[in-house]
Length: 441
Image (cartoon, rainbow, N blue to C red; front, side, top):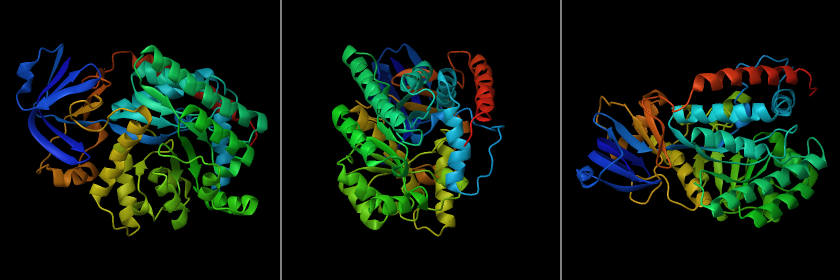
């Protein structure tokens, strides 16, 4: 049992602030929360919450762990004047250069970075065409070794041939079955699965049919990029004679667990279809700016909008700020509280996929909790949590992180040697960069 004693606490949905409360964690859940209740329990660990601020863990709702070793990449990338050339000359060479070892170090490094930033769950979207079968289990090993919660899937695509497309579908199914077997054995449920796809422009109808069958067979949701660039929209009209979401809907592949990513150029009618299925759209502001693909002006139209990073690290404090400021720069009407809700929606995604309760400091909710040393120079109340997140709080405030009721980082220290991990990751990264120079776009 862990008790966080005499602390200031808040939650994002609904926005709530408590002063001088105790939080009791028993096993993997919150057992109790309130003023002075610590005296009713005997704990194995007591965390002094005086002058601390505690809240539910943050969720990165779309990430690419395979980018974990790309930071400062030194390889001959070639020209990237548009989105498609960026994919071909950089990312599709990067993912083809990955092997089992580099896939693991991408995962463990990204997971450590997430925990340090107060991100307690990451929804990953993986690709490694030279190492498909078993790759999701390797990604999971990085989650498990760090103690991070999350999900992953394999990016189905025909860009390297139909056989690899089929292998990608099979890897998604294999991994979902692995997770089901673990759950049946009673192991802690820290990692789950989606059925992943790259983007509609690289998935023919045969691939869509296979993915739809995988969604139905496994009971999982689709995780897919859509309309990130105008090319994706034009290709769908040219080849299939349909809007992207209408094409997806024709395969019966959309449901309440679906994650569509970017959606910059989706039409109002497509958004309506997505909303009718209670699906999610994940917004990735920094990635959109980095790739120069444009700004999504329809964010307020989605029933379920969450925030992700699309491979630019797992720091959700940074993503929240960039997303908000880009919106304001574009003349948008949303305010910090709206973005707070978008951030909180990541926990709704976890609830639908894990079948448990996340995102609140209430009895019965999963104990995914962040302890920070943020000290506000102004009042912090329910009505202005969003303002504090945008204009004040940072990942540098994160001090201690609890996931599934376990201390995975305490006083900014991990229970394992991260120096050795980072050193080995650097060696793996150099090998990936060297391999990229051997791969033609």
